[in-house]
Image (cartoon, rainbow, N blue to C red; front, side):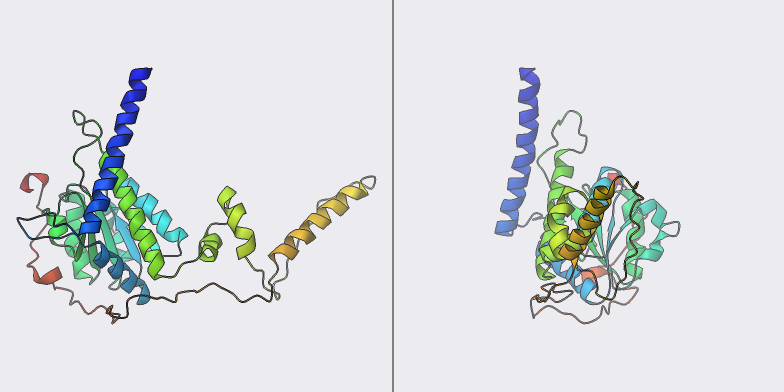
Length: 300
């Protein structure tokens, strides 16, 4: 048992070290690829998402395998913060789901290798629609990173068990970095606990946050059907009625000013908020966009 405890502790320390190393890279703005001059651009990624939302667009997150599962969780996180976000499975994208990607959207593609064939297949179609592409990768020299408008560095030294390199430490870091993207975007969007509570009324978290955040319109009529109570249990009927009355009084609107900022933003005034004007056939950052459909992991 002690050996298993020690192994579990080592695995957790590996993950913790990967998080700290990534944080250090963000602090220093370290260049991750000296060969190509590529630099991770976390701030640029956040601003691209913010720009999409300001212009009526949305966030689309894509990935397959374990990266896809991380993408699904991040989609839920973005939604809870009031950010319109959809998850796009790359295979389904090629069979009609590309219809969810619009010209003012930003697509966050997650692939540790940056060479995932299914993800690379949809890159030309994303660019052709005029949407911006963000790559969350472990290799800034990869095709996905090179053809993204902004790349986010999520590399790790190794997985938790190098002899069986199942995605473990890398997916933990991808999840944490994705959460950081969501929360930094939340800062630009001026999201408050009220906004979050309105999107998360269920569960223990909802019980803690929802009641002070929800207001029922004075014009809304509520048809509440009280349960039938036998004649010899009048007190029970009174208890139910009192409970409902008490709940409604707590949810009723007050004269206090609404502190919900809606979609207002205190973003950088220097941020370009003009509509996306990327021509459908224009590659990102002036690069020539080759056909990525034939790229495989062997090319990386």
